[in-house]
Length: 194
Image (cartoon, rainbow, N blue to C red; front, side, top):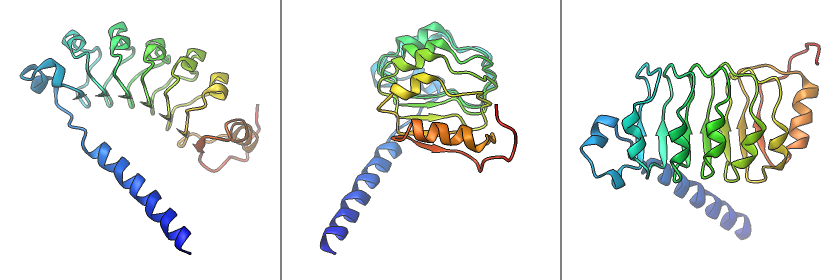
């Protein structure tokens, strides 16, 4: 019993610490970043701005670790984003990306990637280059299939595939193939499968 209590305490402490780390992220707007020392800017929020392109001034913030570009109208991302070697968290959810941006595959330090609610149907096999990727949000992204690259990405821990209904055979194939990954699917459909 003491062992179980100790295990519970240790687990809750680890999760509590992880939550505190997330809470300490201090996002600034680009306008606020202009008034700060470039090296001190580690998290920028450009969400909900109806952006169709990213401001070129963003390129100077080389020490970015977190970048929120969600809820815009982006159809592509600029090449310069791949030069952010410290970037661990990129949120591109709710944009107009009809093709998975290959520039993402050059962001080797990425641990979290949000690309939910974008209309692309395939992820490039180049995603295998993201050795540190642990979490990918694909909620309501109409993927026709997972990339085979996922099968070799041993640091991957979580994939959110909710919002699109897949058949049970498809779901079981990927749950078995990626047994070390928690994959969130909606309940399978009773539809015909490919």
